[in-house]
Length: 387
Ligand SMILES: *Cc1c(COP(=O)(O)O)cnc(C)c1O
Image 1 (tube, rainbow, N blue to C red):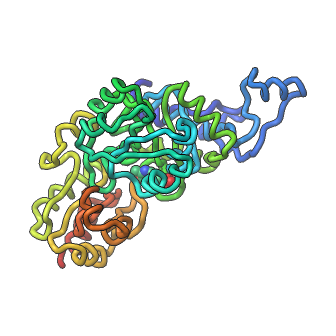
Image 2: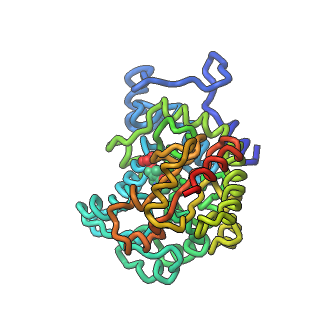
Image 3: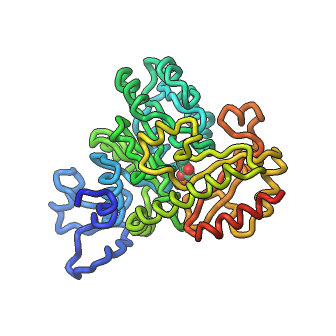
C-alpha cells in the first residue's frame, strides 16, 4: 500500500468487535474509564485514551491519519473549518509581537485575520507579491515566525515555487506554511518540496460535494504537539459526523480529481480560443506564466480556471446571469460546476488598484469545474459567453 490513492481508501480506524467493513460513526462526547486508576493515568497522559471528543474521537483520528499519510506529514490536527485551522495554527505558534510574511493574495477570511484580528494580540504581517522571492526574504525580520502562502492562489491561480521559497525559509529559520486547499495532497505535496506545515479547508475538494465544513493542520510531531496544546483547550474540534463524511470523501478524491482536471484543461483550451475572452489562466496551460513551476510541483492542473472577459464588470455579471446550469455560490471543489465574479462579490470592497495587486481585473470570472459531462459544462459556458 504505497500509492497515495490507495492510502486514501485503505487507511481506516481499527475495527470494533462487530467487524464492520465501513467505519461506524462514533457520535459520543466522552469515553468511559475502567476504574479510578485508569482515569487518573489517562488524565495525566501516562496512558493513551480519548477522554473527551474535544480531545480525540475515532472518526476524527481516522481523518487525520489519512491526511497525514497523504501529505507525507508526521502528524496532524483536524478542525471544524478551514479558518479554524488557520487561526488555531497561529494561536498555537505565535506570541504577541511576532510577525508573519504572507503572499498578498490570500483567502478573504485569512486576509481579515491578518488585518483585523491578529493585530489585537500585536501580531503584525507584511504582504509580498507571489513572484517576489527577494521580497519574501527581505521582509523576514527577527520577529518573523512564519511565511504563509497559498499556491495556486485564489482567485488569480498564480503559482509560487514551494521549493525555492522553502530554501529561503530554512536559511532564515522561519516556518513555511502552505494552504494547499486548491491542489489537495493528490496534486501537490508541499512538505515534499520543503514546507513545514500544510493547512487545508477540507470543505472544498476533500468533501467535494458541498456538504460539510472542515479543516486540518499537518506538520511535524513537535508542531502538532503545540497545536494540540492550544486546540484541546480552545475548542475548534471537528465534529465526528463531519470527520466521517470527509474520511469517506477521501476514498473518491483521486477519481474525482481525475475528472475535475481533465474537464478543466479541456474547458480552459476552448476558452483560450473564444473571441469574447481576453485571456485564460489555468496552471497546466502552456500559456500560464508559471507553467514550468506548476509542472514541477503539481501532478495535474486542478479544477479551477479563471478567465477575463473583454467587457469589464458588466460582461462578468452578464456572463453569470446567462448561465443556466452553473451554480452561483461561494463554494468550490464541488461535484457541481460553480461560477463566481470576484470584482463584484468577494473582492468588491477593494479599490480597483488593490484588486489589480491581487490579480483580479473587473472582467475576471472564476470557474470551479465540476463532475458533470464536459460537453454540458461547455454548452453552459458557451451560452454564457453570448453577451
Ligand atoms: C475556503 C478556504 C478557506 C477557509 O475554509 P473554510 O472551511 O471555509 O473555513 C481557506 N483557504 C482557502 C484557500 C479556501 O478556499
